[in-house]
Amino acid sequence: MSVLLQVLLVILIVLFALGVIWRLSSRRTSVPCPSWLAWLVEMENPFAKNYNASAIIQQLDLKPGMKVLDAGCGPGRVTIPLARALLPAGEVVAVDIQPQMLNRAREKANTAGLSNIDFRELAIEPGRLGVAEYDRVLLVTVLGEIPDRAGALQEIHRTLKPDGILSVTEIVFDPHYQTRKSILQLANTAGFREKAFFGNRASYTLHLCKLNKEGLQREQDKHL
Ligand SMILES: C[S@@+](CC[C@H](N)C(=O)[O-])C[C@H]1O[C@@H](n2cnc3c(N)ncnc32)[C@H](O)[C@@H]1O
Image 1 (cartoon, rainbow, N blue to C red):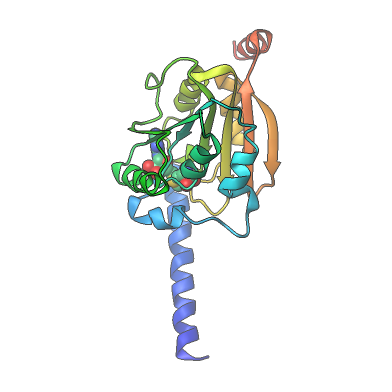
Image 2: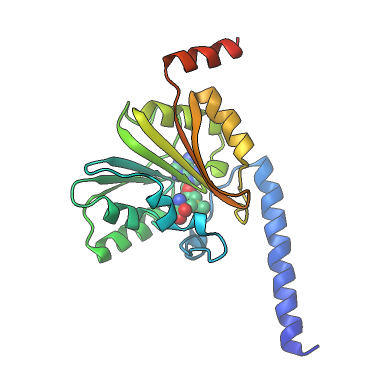
């Protein structure tokens, strides 16, 4: 084997080991994706079409004038094309807990000449968002990084309009990957039901909508 091949093999093994360690430690503690990895988060994945920004946006059934929350927007991979898709009258509120991520996304919005994005440094946690404010909420590879996932979903439920949709995207390469089953368990308790599922186990988008009053009552009775 040539020296170059040996070096490549070692790099691959080290990357794989780091990935496994990160994934295992993510099960114990929810650590946000470090901002120095923004370049990696910004990349589309040629092997997972469902994960690509264009697929996520297409599935949202956007209407003129809609207000969309990109929760955990990171460096703006989805935020920028989303804001473009909402022109001329729609608006994106892009929130993240890391200012470096927000700065990167803001830079891209400026370069693209987009002024319909409101960037906010904010954590998705109980009591932080307005009531019935958004038509759509996006959580793209974010949920696994939030320590209080149940609280975050309850808050998103509160901030969605009655006919709004929460769109959750997961990809198996993410160390914080969440299964459809675990999301549905939490989401049902928060008052959501599944509306649509796109993709497969490796990469998918799950659409959740609010239960109506009767459905909510049934769910609450189940938990008594
Ligand atoms: C893996 S990145 C995904 C970024 C973006 N959604 C995308 O797909 O390109 C996850 C982002 O969620 C942010 N994040 C983690 N916990 C958060 C929380 N509680 N509230 C808001 N943002 C959070 C992290 O700072 C990070 O930028």
